[in-house]
Image (cartoon, rainbow, N blue to C red; front, top):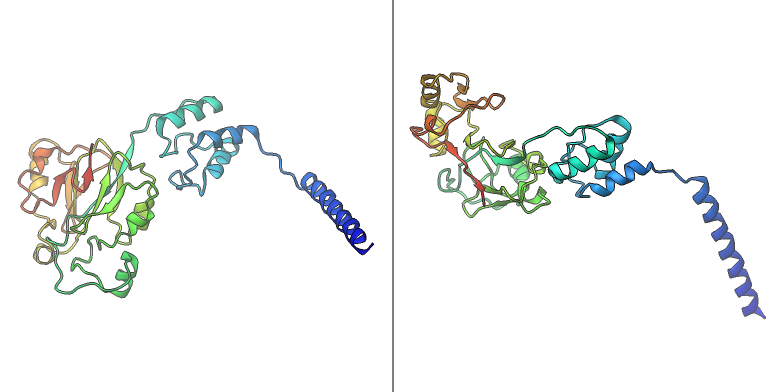
Length: 272
């Protein structure tokens, strides 16, 4: 008798809970805009934040509700942009694909340090503790915070201690840019090939003392560009050559006589 009673009681409790869940589902149901759902389905679901939103769902909602630009999905690229533009009835603007560029060539051969780093394998932690394995205070620490942040297996620290970007895998999401505590990783259109692989603002004598590949602000590249009728292509600011990326005019011939090869072509990148 007691077993039968227990079974009845449990059955009643189960029924009451079921009725409550049905009521709660109807009471608190939030209707999802079918267009938002459709766009979210098209998005790759990487949730990389490359579009500026925390998730693909948030970006889809912003497109429909706030009129956000339909071309911000760096992972999906032009194919995803075109599909979303068709749904929204807008024209998608063409944007060149961007990839990460590591602006440093101070590897463990060019920028040696007499000690051995034994701390936490984190660039940010090493800088915070001032226990770094390279002497240049502007250069890559080489402990792989960028590699850890990348969801697409597109950046890896080489044996020489400098991150190498796989151009084919890189989506330009910017995760590695955010992760780098030295701000030496930037996003640039894939067609740009000439870069100043250095961030040092130290005087030439100091920069060369800590890194053989450092920019020394000699101005040879500036003179070459000026002689070619393109004085706005590059300039020297605070002992460092700075390329004008807003009006990109660099040519490989401007950098042929760079004494340290700090300004170079397609370094720290794998192009297949």
